[in-house]
Image 1 (cartoon, rainbow, N blue to C red):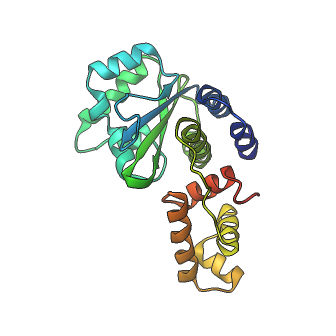
Image 2 (image 1 turned 90 degrees about the horizontal axis):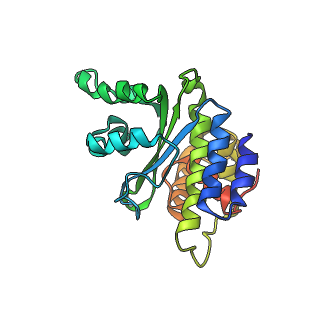
Length: 233
């Protein structure tokens, strides 16, 4: 499923179950047949081990019983990282025991996985885990795509579970223009050259965009702006 098709379809979702099903279908095409959406910090649902999942019940029971809710190295890395990563990349080489959880996950069929951390205002953090039961995915090649899908999913899921703001944020024409170039992968320097403004002016506009949208990165700003109809590709 193309990213723009997923955005269009998920924006039409009427329930959280519907948008979660769309996410599962999209990532299954990449070889990931298990998904977990978990609140990690400063989120309304943080008391729950997860908000939506297709991980095996056997694994979830074991995960909670072993205390992995608090000690999982993937969860710890999500709290300090803005970038998606493979599970094994969260292992502390100085503490080989941190890899035990991944060996145990393999025993129940979760043979490879990727985590996507998502950060919001007031320190909010959620993590989305994608696992493969055959372990034959090209995980590193799909990191950016999984991040885009995750941002859109989280944006829609949040809009379906929380009160909708009375008025959507407003972006200036210049801010929309900058976001559109960011969506095309342009750096701040490149955007400045295209628009004939200084690089630090681009960064200043981006900080204003992040503040208005309640995000902390370009990719989340682009996806949220698309979701709110503030820009269109």
